[in-house]
View 1 (cartoon, rainbow, N blue to C red):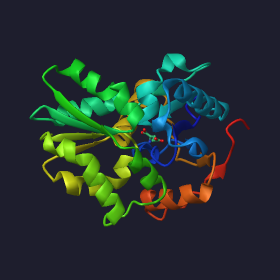
View 2 (view 1 turned 45 degrees about the vertical axis):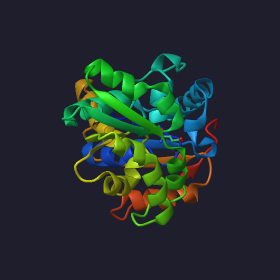
View 3 (view 1 turned 90 degrees about the vertical axis):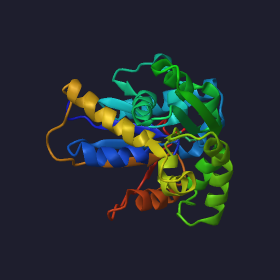
View 4 (view 1 turned 90 degrees about the horizontal axis):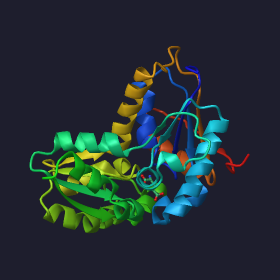
Length: 269
Ligand code: DGL
């Protein structure tokens, strides 16, 4: 069991914010990554559709023999509980709990902003869980669908005019609320965290859902005694369309001379 890979999925490049940290934090672990690029963006879909996509993604990863599945996607984590996944036979980790814990630790003025996809914000997943932690926390949120498309299409440069304009528009109500902490509740957003930080200012702490989830995976592997001890020998990236587009953004984001080459799959293979 220990030798099996970890499965990570998202609609596209967003889950790489988690995978990048896993590559660093758990150096013995092999990783199978799935980006369901043919059906992205996920964040504009109903819960029923998201449950169907999630079942396909998890089934694909389980067929690859993974020992644990990470839903490195705020939209899936917010809308599809593990109980709705058929034949789930391995631990399933989502981004909500680790992200919430980090935000609660970071805030001093108890004003927390949340940005995510429309489906994530509509679900109220982050806001309601924050309140459960501490009823005095006040939240403000905004759904930012255009950001997913911009990131996915490679508009990730810190100085990009379009990216900066769209971010300013989405972040204006969050800034006006006087938050000291901002949850990047969509895993695509940490890829453009510099732009978001520049707009919000350095006094605001950004919480990266991908990073926090990778820390959680490390903890859970230790807890379940599932850590692989040999050096890593396999990282595979699968996408359901446009592998070249994925590779371009992936290799800029992963950095360090990374040479990700995604394999095209239709999931049902
Ligand atoms: N990265 C995903 C999320 O965290 C999905 C974005 C999308 O496809 O809409 O929500």
